[in-house]
Length: 197
Image (tube, rainbow, N blue to C red):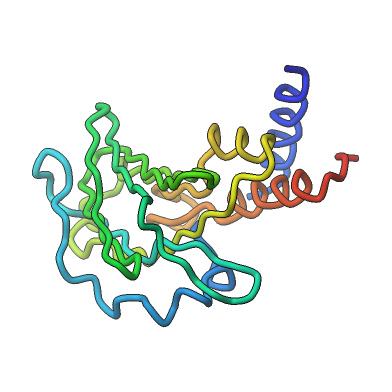
């Protein structure tokens, strides 16, 4: 139990020392060949809201030898701030597409048996009307790894791998990339078995 508190404190310190998941493109090269060029069939957002965000990408497992596996038993779930949940479909190449509305907060969960689960937080609240008209296309691939470390599993269960919201600093909707990089640094340390300084 003391490990949980220790790693939570380390995570807080790392996040406090940084500023910007986008999921980085260098993590995704093996999935590029199977990516749909354009998001086509939009799955309507919950509650028939006005669509503001289209999140799309490839859901896959990456291997060290460069091979890519797509999840036959994987699951993507969209949950809004009211707790309403919707299963998101993806094709045999892992391509998925999610529509999200305005003035809501969404959790997008990616799961597969024997893998770490990951989730994203997308907050569409507070976006000014002047930015709503154009909407946002957000290419975001998601790769899961085998569940081989209970501390990493617990960390990813409790913390989103990526967060996007209105960023007042730049005056636009944006991913908090520094948060994601900080979380990945903690994961790398846990996987290496190293201790924190």
